[in-house]
Image (cartoon, rainbow, N blue to C red; front, side):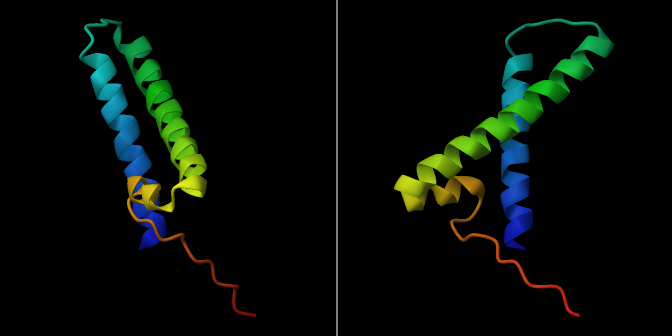
Length: 79
C-alpha cells in the first residue's frame, strides 16, 4: 500500500500544478495543450518528488509530503 500512496501523491501534486498553470489564462490549441499538460505534470511530479526526497534526508518528518513517511519495503522474489 505504501508504494501506491507514494506514487499517487506526486501524481496529484503534478496534476495540481498543471491545473494551476491552466488557471493562469494561457490558451493553446488542443494538441499543444495536451502535450504541455503532460509535460507540466511529468516535470512537476519528478521535481516535487525529488525535492521532498532531498529535504526528507535532513528533516525526516517531511516524508508526509510523499503521502506517508514510511519508506516502501521490497521483498525478494520467491525461488
